[in-house]
Length: 258
Length: 258
Image 1 (spheres, each protein chain N blue to C red):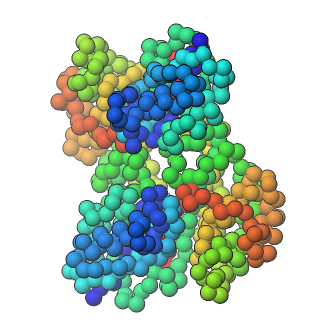
Image 2: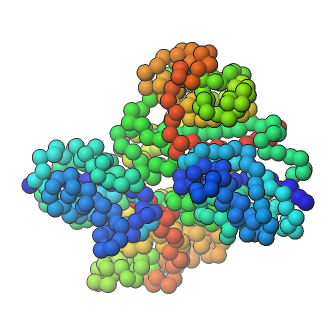
Image 3: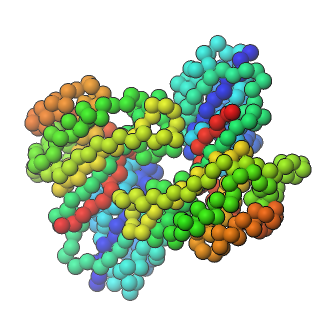
């Protein structure tokens, strides 16, 4: 028996999220089906990040166990004919039998994209959340700085989080939050730009990145002072943070195992 | 009666091209329907570039005539509720009654994207054509230089081109062809990159940009010497140029009227 680790990229727009659900099209469902068809075994993957419906990934991770003689590194090309066009396995390798994608210590990096300006760019609608007004990038950076470090992120988690419901800790470490503004010269209308929020942490609670994006935007539009984001964090109360930004703006960029 | 000029952006993936066709979803069909619903008149637009099925636009242009009292510059927001999410009007203004988007002299800019590397990026599949091997960018640039200037582009046109079938001229001026290579650091697998071909010209024959992209790739993969592209041009024979690259890699970036 071999345990194989896969790195997976997908456009999550047309999926009901990563986690398998009867009657819905999910990333996990497609991976299980493709691997089962390829190996002739009944395969169930264990995913690292159970991304929400509409969330994308460039580097999610999953493992599965198999008796198949297929060499570990051959799953990338071998799976192409079995997977839909919007899911691709980008790397594969054998790992130890006890290696687990959620239990091993890791750093995850997410990116949240807002596209801003007088009109929405239809070529970016799958990968960016649209806002009309261009936010103040310096205010967003100031607000973001309060989130860096080890904190209790209760205010930035969906209260229906399984971890929190089961009495688990909301303490996570955010290593970095960067807020970038791009003004693509050839893009659409004058005044259009892209805001890219990149966040790396030891782990993230349910909806945490989307709530952080929604909250930083409150500071960026001037509705909130950057300091109010600090107060929201300290309150340990979901109602004190900003709204949850749309799923379509979020991409899991990668997971680095330590 | 007023003549209104619209600038239009769209993700062409799910359309049978710009030009109206009975029984098919087209950009023109959606624009006509949306404008007719908004104004209560029966509107038919005249488009500048009749892009193929699967081709995208950031700045196509169309005009229509109307008696509607809607101020010319208000069509951008007014059309939002009437258009599907993958089509947006990005600018609108009144023009003279005789102004015509195809008869007035213009420079058009197209961009063709190849995504290259060991595995296809599912987040780019709508806007880039996938090739496994990373081409030689310098060879592509060398080949591209032969196309700049005023030439007879018969070799780079689909022979079923209406213009050519009706005995029209295949002489066009290409002002610039730039070939850029981007190595997005966070992207997918090692060795992945994006090749962007940007081309500006006085006008383009049917499939011309896609045939240029397919031909430059022949030079980039080393199948052809760059000089063979010059010979292909001089031959005035479609069979001497390279294959037509996939529609999904092509975007009409914009049209500048002189």
